[in-house]
Length: 477
Image (cartoon, rainbow, N blue to C red; front, side, top):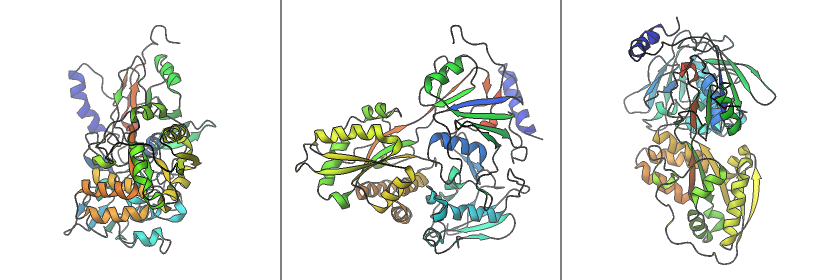
């Protein structure tokens, strides 16, 4: 029965505080920073998509509220074999996907290989990069990872190319969610997709077969909402939870981890001696102003996640005062479609330094390919980290900012070198200028209980239950 032990554990402290025990039923309404347009865990790229994926999909390992790892689909946390190059993974018995199919070790092996397959167009091949055979799958020379050895219906052995002690933490990142072979549209998470509206609104219903049991609420509605509209809906009691950058008036918002970082990349291979001058010019910009312009947050170091050299708000990666760049160079500024306003501002700032920058916008998938191939002068890249652990996060940054070959070199160096030194080398190789980092706030209506923020800046919607709705605040419209 769903959470009997959990309910008993909750009951005593709640009664002591005069509260109420968890209750079942109702529909949870959640406003996100935008509509979750992508639900495939291999291709999620922004906080709204990641939150939806957390509800629909399940990972082998889960991040707990305090940052500790706990078993997800696995019966126990992975333990490294002697030498640190192999892990045994054993699934819980009786697991099912939303469509009724059993979750098997073969699905795990296929899901990990899929992150590297050219046909999957994944943004997160870094998760499976440490596994033996990764390069063969990525290059299309194999369809399965030689290091993902299926031992039985529920057990497999994962062999790595080199020791990577934080591999279990990488398995907790949402891109590592397990999907059935040949059907990535379904998952094994606490909710399953019921419908998608024309505006991108999702309605999810509780999945009775989830390994932790049924969620407390019967259904969840996830929608993208503009900030003022979300605030008004919270005040009128029409909305339960807003996960957005701004705090909603009349609530006690909770800061979530800031995990979306924006970088400028100055390509030293194409710009030569001018690259250092351009990095100095970009590094001297008012990054707080840029953050406000983008509407994405504030300059703040990701001290617990990234070394200073690639952490926005950390120690400056470029030394020396900037000046006017001689020769009036002409450069291209490659950006994703959603970063156009920020790119226009950088264009003006560079012009003031004597640089003429032509802005070139591209879809996110095309931007990643261009960055990996080095076919850009300056690129503006935003990365929402899906891992809450330092070494996997550094590997994730290397994959996003430099591509697979750079990530491979970082992975090899992590086995023998200090991560801060590896990050510094990465920053120099790619001409990285960290700009700013953004985060969300969780604003909940009174009466909402069980809200826990996870290290990857998601909320476990299955743990929330609905109390009595309070009447709208006086004057709310």
